[in-house]
Image (cartoon, rainbow, N blue to C red):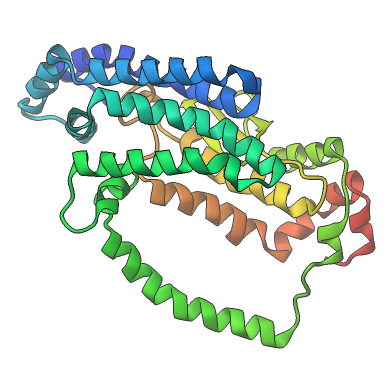
Length: 333
């Protein structure tokens, strides 16, 4: 049975295709900035991204599109997918109507410029290079929170953009439960003295080419579909989906402590798997991506911690490590 049968919904999705395409282009441009774009290209890239972001806002909040969403909202007998499309679009329109295009433009442009500044500051361990960009981003986000509105805490408005309905008080309640329990675990681990830090393995040097082969072999073992996904390099690992059939992850190669690169790959594999398992019929629709960043992080942490950091997993990938890195042969599982 088709997911979308209502004629108004079909028309809405057809109109939405252009808006989705802008988002697709911005995603690709963002991925390129963090992976392959030369640093001197930041001014052009930041300007182009800001222009596209405001064009996206203009299209989705335009009278014609909003009227069509309102018409779809009044349709009777919509199935759960069709209702989902309407709900997601109504939420995005409501949010973007509150944000002045000039603020959207400035935050987008500043964020793009800030990434290059952060990358250079990180390489030189010089926070002052990045500080003015960070201060401006914080200020712009404070302005954003005021425009969006909130009941208790300005951060509530920003949290809601990433996890719908989540509030600062909810996060504090979670942390208040976790903190004492985590402290007990940390105290126990410290007192037992079983885990040494740093481990000799953390200091062992590796060649980037060898570590690349490790990561590619582990991804193959996990079933990462290279015809729909890829692995690249960036200063900080991330995952981005361009669509159901184009999901990209990155890792970093620092030349020491191979676990940092390996577990980043396993972590991002979890994010990618969430996106790769979206129903193909939902591709290029408002509901064709992850529904929750909390679930997203749950998937990545599951693969990294519940699977990846286990003796069973180490035993499975041990032959790969011994073959490519060599220095692991001197250690037991």
